[in-house]
Length: 378
Image 1 (cartoon, one colour):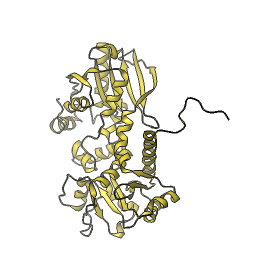
Image 2 (cartoon, rainbow, N blue to C red; image 1 turned 180 degrees about the vertical axis):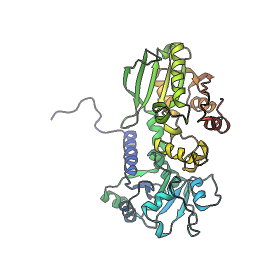
Image 3 (cartoon, rainbow, N blue to C red; image 1 turned 60 degrees about the vertical axis):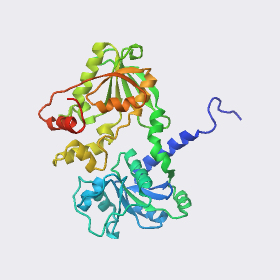
Image 4 (tube, helix red, strand yellow; image 1 turned 45 degrees about the vertical axis):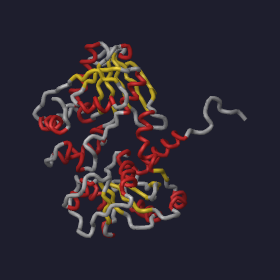
């Protein structure tokens, strides 16, 4: 029988870990529970995608009633009182009457109709809370869902029951490390000339990790790999600003100005990173906008949803720069934190150049928040 020559017979361990992670992300986005294995195994499903069937599958694997894992800021808002903010998550014990998919979605999403939990739903930290809670919410974030998980301690035979139901079991270590493994393994998958209005010699190079579905792009102008220290811009994708011309942010004008600046120098690159809304995803960014319309600024809106102020991963950019052969650069940014984050991955940054866009009458408070609370030099 003929053999496939040139291909390994089996995937390596790292590929298998990534495959499991990508399946887990896909499953929870569809409301399919996942068995998270750790010191204490938990069966988990995001509140946002939970269904009656999901609850039934959780019950089949659980040895105790489900809890609702939330970021401390979200739990504090529901309970109407202050909570410690240095915890991975707060686990809320729920009255059985609250174990309904629609009710749990409303508890998870601050943009929906609000109500405080009853006093009987007092917060109780999991034991041990930090690792399992962090892993559960990390999976929700990787799926770009609200970081709110329905979780139940798993029974001793949960692995066998999960297999019988066709449910995935994934180690917590693979969830916590998976995004960095994927970022470190980004490789070029496509490249072509794309002449731009402001840069006729531009090329677009697509990057993707093995077995991954998310692509990051590099807009390369000239030959930056031969320049001593070319201009480079890290630009997080912004559907509303870059494509629609939204006035709520300065992203679209910054992108076009960066391309013009680099083209004027003759060489450089814009890394167009699939990290919408500082890494929270487009849907959550729209939710954050809704909260901003109620009076929150961009940082507090992210936190109200359960996300951090900035969820971006700069190992992605460092890996892309390595693949492009750019070892030294000048970073085109108003954000000194980007310089520190990129330098932490071994990139030599010889200077920072500002990319300031004037307020337009709509985004004035947004820009002021970037300066006062994110430390942008604008």
